[in-house]
Length: 144
Image (tube, rainbow, N blue to C red):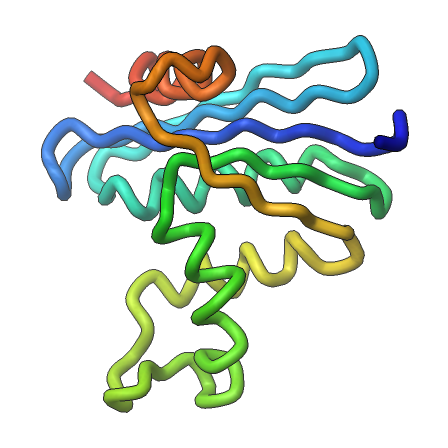
């Protein structure tokens, strides 16, 4: 694997769903690491999962190969399977309903532009060290 690639580990958390939520991400490039986090007073877990990826990608200034590790099937499937059809249907589902969280899906689509992205699903709360750290960042960022 090239030493130019960046690993991103993300997670979102919510206290109630909907309710106050937080997101966390770890970016790793070579021997450098950056932890970022944030929160929202009224949100959903899915929105926080998406926000973590958007915020992490926003820290990358030039196109690079990126490996994104997430425990969110919603985010991973949304990008890899559902988004092409949503875009073709102008952000509508197969049932002709507006796509939920379309605002964030559009931001995520734009943030991915220019990067070579490889998606990896990890089982949450299963001892994956970086996923556990991203989860702790997300939980710590939930507004109290």
